[in-house]
Amino acid sequence: MTEPLRNALLFVVVFGLILSTGFIQSWNTALLIFNMGLISAIMSLGVNLQWGFAGLFNVGVMGFVALGGLAVVLTSAGPVGEAWSAGGARVLAGLALGAATIGAAIALWKRMAPGRTRALAMVALLVAGFFAYRWVFDAGVQAVEAVNPASTGYLGGLGLPVLMAWPVGGLLAAGAAWIIGKTALGLRSDYLAIATLGIAEIIIAMLKNEDWLARGVKNVIGLPRPVPNEIDLQQSPAFVESAQGLGLDAVTASTLYVKLGYMGLFAVVLVVVLVLAQLALASPWGRMMRAIRDNETAAEAMGKDVKRRHLQIFILGSAVCGVAGAMMTTLDGQLTPGTYQPLRYTFLIWVMVIVGGSGNNFGAVLGGFLIWFLWVEVEPLGRLIMDLVTAPMAEGSWLKGHLLDAAAHMRLMTMGIVLLVVLRFSPRGLIPER
Image 1 (cartoon, one colour):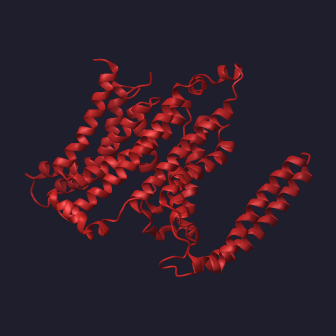
Image 2 (cartoon, helix red, strand yellow):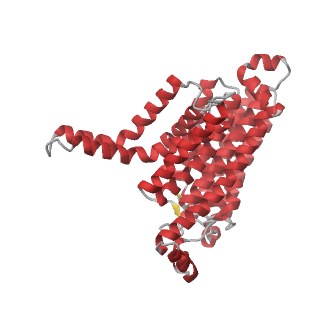
């Protein structure tokens, strides 16, 4: 069997599994899996750019995804006028003062000669700037969060179309990646992993605790959507008539219509990202990145600026993850910082890349669809298997109760088994790098 035919068959099998969900369970479930598979494939492509192209071990994927979700709130949510009047100007002034303090500290460090005088001046500047920043910023935050905290209590966003939030999510993640990369990319790979994981946790902690920014753990709900609302479709006589003509009730037809709309938008983004990634891989720049990945010392000896190139690919991969994070928040219609967990938004994405094939863009896409399908379907399937296994057991048996309770953990065990099997029989992934 030729390699292209084998790869095509792998995609057919994965999409066949998703289609079987539509026939066995429901088409709403199948479309939801497919839509999240599209988003997961984009995240997987972002990580593959960093690891597969350049060998950068980024364990902070969750943070960049969360920044993409934050971009949806900042871009598309409506501004809260009362909160802006109460303390918005003071919050902005405090943030500007903090940024000015950091900028002044950097300039002072560069201009003064090394020594005790520079150290004392730096400490004095940072301490004075910190207290001034807190004095201005805290008063503004308290005023903003006191404005109807049950439903708002934050500044809101710009009220722009939600599709504009997707590139903004990429830009926000890219900006964070630039800051992280300038400080952490000079570290060894294991230290880089620790640094990115820690910074991702800092980002999540900020989203959970800074209510003025995005309501913290109170969540922002009712975000704008790029597709119609199901209720509006169900109240449209023309849509109801069309649904009846297809033999569907209005509720089912409206949910399918909305999910198909999302699917079209997400598929366009995936195709664009995949095409650009393939062009980059086949370009001289892509060959240079792989040469740096394989032997940094030899690349440096040939005059390549390794740290600069690492920064480039780190920013690009993080931007792709930010776009995917914005798409996911748009699909959910809400930002829930409490749901961002490393298991789901870092470990699972890495499993997708490794299983699909590190260094191969099509492998990353395949891994995104396959692993997300298993993540969703394994738990109900595990429950069904446990019900069948424990059916002959007596009611109240400790073993029966233990097995039924353990069904919820089938996801984690399955991910581990899939990862081990693929690493044993296809160490370079299902679609390995050429």
